[in-house]
Length: 325
Image (cartoon, rainbow, N blue to C red):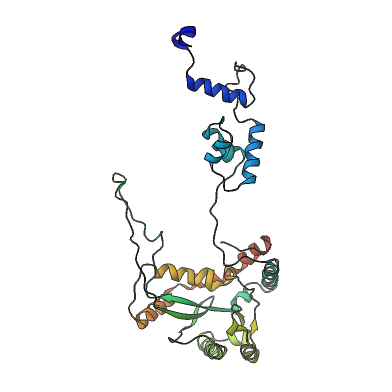
């Protein structure tokens, strides 16, 4: 080629580029007047890429490049991200693969809640008493966010490191009941015991006394108890006791921590606070947890109860599927 065309002959890279252009549908070697270069990503190519993605949602640009070696990776990436507007997302963990029946139950509970809120407004939220149990560990691993450090940009190689370690398996079961204005009752289950209908009934009796002492007038205005459907919460003995109290029990669908304020709000914040801390005794752990709960602003508890409204709405809009935020 150099003998025929001289020193200005076309390079190998340029020849390959023109071949790709012609394979993509180009028929003219001249640029149209005032239009610049012709696009490589033709409608036919975009459609082929779209079909390849729909066939395998876990595709990679390298995989697409193997299927269409005549198209550069940069062009493929532009087609995927700009022309087709795809973006790659990581799968998120959910508590359970919900069946249609579970989704129907979740939508029913969400609809009932929204109808009640639409009718009574904030007065309905003022009546809600919610609670749940959770494990608190002697040692809780810090989150990625908590491990972040400020580092100077001139020393990028000095990235902080974390070492794998074995955490203590010691833990306590904490039971917390709360309302929009703060915590009502905090209890810790003694070691070697489990929550039964009898023990839960005693907890509810203590909860009633705490409401009477800490929230005057709340019992007379009416209580709406919001707890999950764990077996001790739904036994005949527990049901009879709540009927004797005259409390309304709000229906909570199964496998729905995203609709339980203790799970998606209070305990989530508490676990982040516990991250990186180490306790040596039950008493030390329990006092620290109780102090943390007491020091939380009333606005935080109010926010947790209030989130039930948008979460219920999102549950309806998602046809009963899990609500992430």
